[in-house]
Length: 267
Image 1 (spheres, one colour):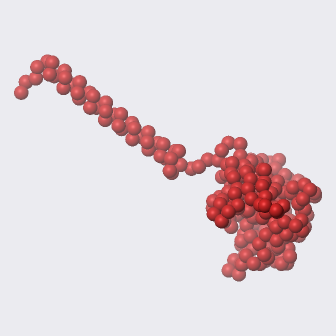
Image 2: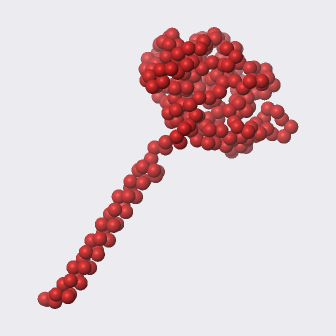
Image 3: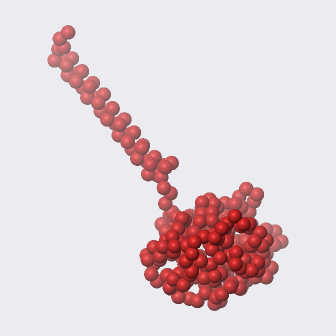
């Protein structure tokens, strides 16, 4: 069958339109995949810019420092790190949380338990339950591990969204010297505001009992303070670090050579 010139031009135009539609569809697929792997389901979640770079230790007027095994002096965190013993991990098969005493004791004897003390210290606009000056009911804060703005609301399902993290995890401490402490010293370690920060629940679960060699806060702005705080806690309670842990801490502190130790403001 022979096409006329007009028919030939119509067929060629239709062919071009079909190819244009196929090209547009291909571009849409490529763009969709790009979104999926950069800001979609598989994307790494980056913390917001300007996340916290430090966290408080005490709140003047109603919180007191908890006596540690030894005082930590102000100075370069890297220098204090070099004073910590370097050893391997001790056994963990005999670890039990009860070795640190009852959870959230009122160690500083200010009339409020430690969990509520830390919530009151870290939350902005902390609200209290009716007829209580201790039991925190809600508040907001810029969470340090992720850098996100979070809201805490007390409740059977909502409270776990904000958790109180032991900066030096109790399981990690047990394998690095806490077994050698007295029961009273372990109670202090578990309730010392120096070792406690209110954080995002899922981030805390992700950290678990990790040390600096295996977990660091996603909020990179907070890492120098976080590592310096771990070093300060370990020095205060005569704990040691593993070789891998010390190397990880040194890498973090290399980016902030002026980072100081973290100590209660009363010291």
